[in-house]
Image 1 (spheres, rainbow, N blue to C red):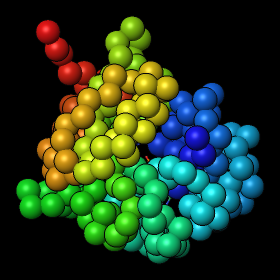
Image 2: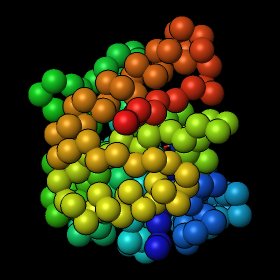
Image 3: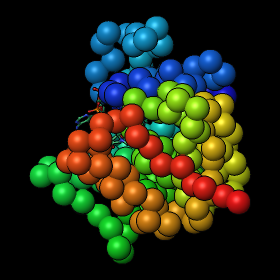
Length: 202
Ligand SMILES: NC(=O)c1ccc[n+]([C@@H]2O[C@H](COP(=O)([O-])OP(=O)(O)OC[C@H]3O[C@@H](n4cnc5c(N)ncnc54)[C@H](OP(=O)(O)O)[C@@H]3O)[C@@H](O)[C@H]2O)c1
């Protein structure tokens, strides 16, 4: 599969590590210099969006609108767009919740794209393996398009996660606060980033 990761930050690089073994992965960047990151090609946001089958938006929530505009809404039409964001405002407070979610807001910006929420409940440090030691992490997935969610489940399994379908895109309203709880435990409660969330099933 051709996967474009928009954003060359911590999450972008971690997902590249997890995905590049089984997929063709390129980065999309506001400023594609240098032209390679971790050996992968870095394109302008719009060229990366045009090239890919699946696009991962690995950018801050507050930058989403600007990135979508630069990537080009037409280039994202009909494509699976994965939103990994934990919606925080400039002050570090939760930016959206209860009546909407970052993923739903992204979906409103991208009519025609198949937006799927995933990866936000995982620290970048553990995103390239989907596990911590012997423990597989759960990949919580929300979206309205069944086939798009199936693709994200496949990508998650390829990395090493245990994917779980949480429900339609509006259930991102529940998954996003889980990511914020993880951030609080990791940083404010000083547990560090080698922690993660797994769903226990009988
Ligand atoms: N870090 C984690 O552990 C973690 C875990 C789960 C979810 N997330 C979510 O994943 C997303 C990316 O997080 P990250 O840790 O990878 O952040 P990061 O290291 O700061 O990287 C974000 C990347 O987004 C791109 N970007 C585009 N527009 C931007 C803007 N206006 N300001 C800043 N960066 C912009 C930049 O890449 P270019 O310069 O190449 O355009 C930048 O490197 C966020 O939404 C975050 O909430 C993070």
